[in-house]
Length: 165
Image (tube, rainbow, N blue to C red):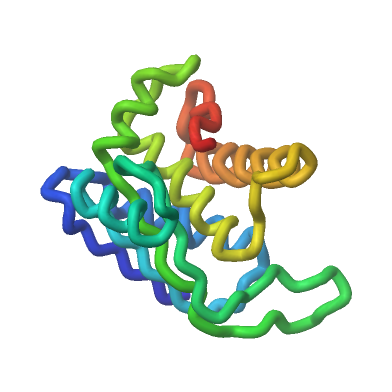
């Protein structure tokens, strides 16, 4: 799995954790090991520009996903998943920090960025949360991936509750 993490935000973030959880999520979703992903961490101003340009919505957001090859998790009967370029995930630590402190289970900016990384991966794989059943599926899968990664790393305490909308 080729995953690049590029921090352009000016904020110190745990890049290794972002890389690790992205790799874990892609492996858990059975994405081809030669697939490629880019994660870019930007400041609120850059995220706001992207949010306006691509979503026509004001203000910065927490995470945006830009799929490339529209890869999907393989079905249970597929032996070999296709490889390709997953696309880009853009994260904003300023928004993540605010969301983490305002969440019912308060958590750190880095924990929120880990959750948002998984959220972004799932969007790249075609998951969405517009409809209630889609939201239940996506957020359930997101929680299972974050919980699995945290357990594998021996991290204690409750996992961050989903704060993305």
